[in-house]
Image 1 (cartoon, rainbow, N blue to C red):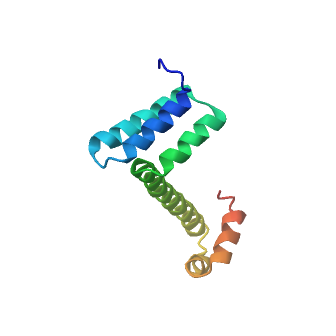
Image 2: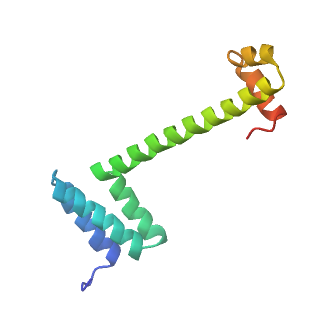
Length: 118
């Protein structure tokens, strides 16, 4: 960048200009600016750009994707834990406990600890 302005300022100004448009080119430009910021900025400067990006449509899209992934990973982890607990209880023929864990969350967590299920 051949300018008297700091990289951060050029990126922030470019982001502001990109925000005025609502088309795919503007969104691609914002993504490219975010990538440049990630590569060339650090610390407080990168944080400022992150805040500016968070207020854009692409920032919202990135956030939404993260939320969806987090939910999917959490759901998968919960299913795996429940499967492990079910297998342990069946292995020990503890059918009454198996039935009880379907309705009693506190008891379910107690058994997770008992069987050392993370």
